[in-house]
Image 1 (cartoon, rainbow, N blue to C red):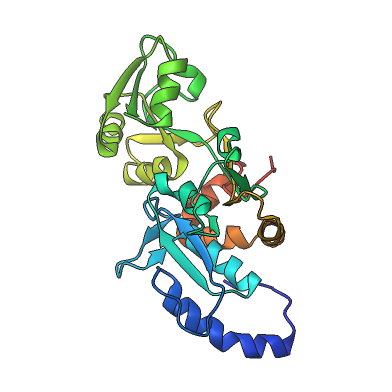
Image 2: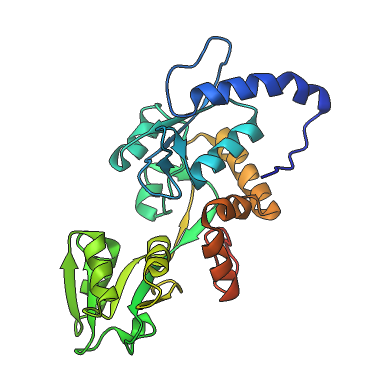
Amino acid sequence: MKRKYIIPVAAMVLFAGALVICRAINVGGGSVPQGLENPLVVAMELQYPPFEMTDPSGAPSGISVEIAKGLADYLHRPLKIENTAWTGLIPSLQTGKADLVISSMGITEERRKVVDFSIPYGQSGLALLIHKSSKVSAFEDLNHPSVSVAVRSGTIGATIAGEKLPRAKVMYFEDLAACVLEVAQGKADAFIYDSVTVYQNYRKHPATTRINVTPVPGTGSNWGMAIKKGNRELAEQVNAYIAFSLKEKSFDAIAREYLGGMVSFFEKNNIPFYFDVGEK
């Protein structure tokens, strides 16, 4: 994917060699070699493919990793990714172990109390995996005594079902695969989960399932890059990068590398994709 950053030619020549070296060494963690100062340290939990994950060699990979690389390029800084457990992401900012968090993190008022957020760079919501012969077509159809809904215990989908579907038969499972199987075999009408997982499992079971990826009401949220409270300089730089990338559709290009078929599906059905922030 090509990125169109306007950089003076002389500066580009001097910087290119160092950038290649520092990114090759620092992405994935480890110490910063002498002479490569001021790395951009990005914390993310590498457990949410295809956004945050590792490749077969164990190196960071995924859409968020590519976004972080683009930001480091934009700022002319070497990149260091710290694989951090979800519960440790915000503390890593507060203790100065990371400069920012890029980890598909939703912007919430509760989190705003302890960190600053960039402008939104992505959006997400829950979707439905539906058995092909079910009469269900949307979330509004689920709250009926004849409808069975599979949810994964401890997820937002389970919370939403418990709160908003008092008349439905809600079935709780520990494993993702069990929820999918219930729908694929017709034992449940629908499964509530994130749109990437729903789409991927629809592709695995096209003969017995269909999907509705319009965000389930009340589950839509904007993603932001979290920054330590009061770091206005970095916040302004990050916001400039996000605004530029959204305008140039750079994030969409990255998404197509990892989710080409899903992007096309969203476009075909006129549904906003992850990086169609603010669009209808």
